[in-house]
Image (cartoon, rainbow, N blue to C red):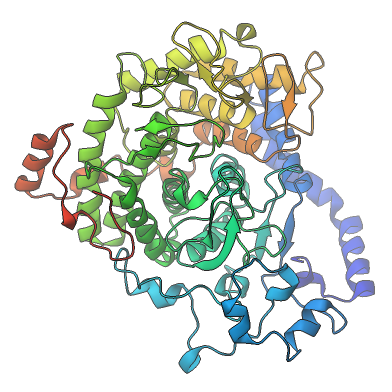
Amino acid sequence: RRYTEFYGTSERSSSINLVHDALTKYRLWEEEIEKWQDPILKDEKLPEWYKFTLFNELYFLVAGGTVWTDGQPPAFSETSPAYQHKHSKKGTKSESVKDNHVKPAAEQVNDGDDLPNGEERSVSMYAAVHGSQMPEQTSGLRSQEPIPYLLSKDGPENVGKFLYLEGVEYIMWNTYDVHFYASFALLDLFPKIELSIQRDFADAVLYEDRRRVKFLADGTSGIRKVKGAVPHDLGTHDPWHEMNAYNIHDTSKWKDLNPKFVLQVYRDFAATGDMTFGRDVWPAVCAAMDYMDQFDRDCDGLIENDGFPDQTYDAWTVHGISAYCGGLWLAALQAAATMAHRLGDRPYAEKYKLKFMKAKAVYEAKLWNGSYFNYDSGTSSNSRSIQADQLAGQWYAASSGLPPIFDEHKIRSALQKIFEFNVMKVKGGRMGAVNGMTPKGKVDETCMQSREIWTGVTYGVAANMLLHGMEHQGFITAEGIFLAGWSEDGYGYWFQTPEGWTTDGHYRSLVYMRPLAIWAMQWALSPPKAILEAPKVNLMDRIHISPQAVRAVGEIGVRKIAPDNRCIPSSTFQCEC
């Protein structure tokens, strides 16, 4: 565990030293806590319920199954099954490669000494490849190969390895589509831990694990981890090594995970100003972006959903272009272009800016209806539903100091629509924002998740409102979570805030990660200096694109362009144009 870096591993001496420090320094600790909390607690402009809830939602960082290690590989005693398997002559390396079934975690421990020419499969092997020109997927990740993100990184930036559960009912470590919302708390309070988590996922992007798993939703099977795809989670039984414990859907086909990775990386890069971090994770950003090209069926720059719940709302089907995933993709294109510019990668900056310009025109033409963005571009009964989370991409763009994706009047119009319908038409705004609402003002009953109120999403929507000058609406929206979950008149969910509840107060998944998103509200109210004091220059305007390319974008508009074999240069990720 992380504390052994300071107190050693001796049971007696480390415990004595820990207690000694606590008894002699607790007054100092209390003073430091007060210094941290007082500026917020004494801010008369902030509602009392907000101050109360902001700090109390942090319970999850301790109670959420948290593990903080020193960053070293796991050790095993000589009597453990894992140790005995590692040193036995049975189960040869060739046999383990041939095995297609998923082995117990204990059977996956390995020596890591059999790589040809002493090579180590790590992010550095692909760094020179720089993006889409990645090696062919010729073989899976062998169980004998060392996992570089299990190994400690020496130096002052080594803060160990951090894991926390999606929730006490959904036992998966660092569930990434949910961390997207919760990560504001870590970035604001423990930024080096947040960067460590992003490094883990950057390493994971470039890995492949060809062991077969079965997906419960449709009974099909596939490989556990696809190269280029951001994993849903870091695993359950053997974190970092056996990723994607989630097996309802094949998350390599989800449309939100890769854009969320790019958006989180850019936000963290912009907030910390850590150029070393930016350079280290850039190859993974390029790979994650290029991987998504396969979902741009008509090569108009915009990804399409595939008619199943291929995003964090994993029971809510999406058809064609969606407000949620499409908006995340637009924001990711802008973030990637800006990051490329800041890192001096001109070709990629131009590539992503051009794609952004194409995709934005299509997105707005297909989804904007005059007051908000439709749920998706399909023809289903809920395609015109008002999704509370429709502006998630714009939320991240604003939180990262990026220029707005859409015109300000469209952003405010959509947020106002969400406030009037998803918030105020549910018990007068006393429960939060319902995920889906029909244009007629009725809760969208399409599925379980469309009719739920998600606590973390509500906080994210409120933060977005704050970022766009709608403080009144933002605080009323978030107060619904306090009233229903934390107040004496609510449902009694304090210190166990669930993922969500229905309009009659029935919860799903207590003690959940996503409500940490309330810290996105504090982020909106008090941005870090690196973002607040950054030059007010639109870096996208500094990325030069040839006049011919600009004209081509204007000519494309929203028409379906002819298939172009050049739209995806990668031999690894194939387009279906």
